[in-house]
Length: 264
Image (cartoon, rainbow, N blue to C red; front, side, top):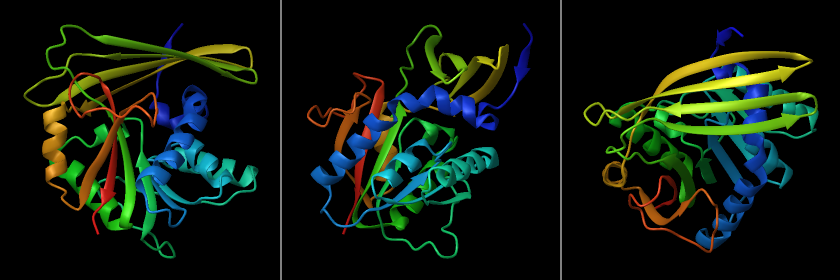
């Protein structure tokens, strides 16, 4: 079976099917952590790299005023269509994490922002990563929270790692295989390949995406946070999204979720 070379962000439906399963759990965590660490004021939400809009939709359903952006026009179109289909509203636009600006009619002072599933690692330089954090902090009100999730890297890992997900929606089945090669400690880049096996309307085809992520261990992530003093780290979790089980920010686990608060 031939493999088609596609950026998987150009096929938002298949991307959405793969990741949609965890949406409610993530939204539950965001709301619970907002109560735990926030001051209880406001329900305005900003989502950098909102992708297919799965969390934008879920949070709008829960009564949040949602704004979000993504660098891929196909994702934004898909997200807008799904919001309209469900009779909900969100302000969504095409933009980049390291250089985003709020469009006319969207005011700052957000109560919460989030970027949960390692999309932050697409920012391949320290300058871009710090600039993204500065811009998010500027968009938040004092006391507002930013939830940032990403995978930490073990630079001593000897071989590639593999993850596999299988998900279905109606008559569409997607098998996702992601392979990550050992990171280059000097450049702080790691190579990834994602292959989707898609069965849709009785036809099965393969599509592949290759890209590079910027890497972080715990010390490197702490060093980045020191460059953005307007955000303070108030708690750390893993991707189990268990509010009752905070973690230390260290290298004992891979999937880290930071709870950051804008200083008054």
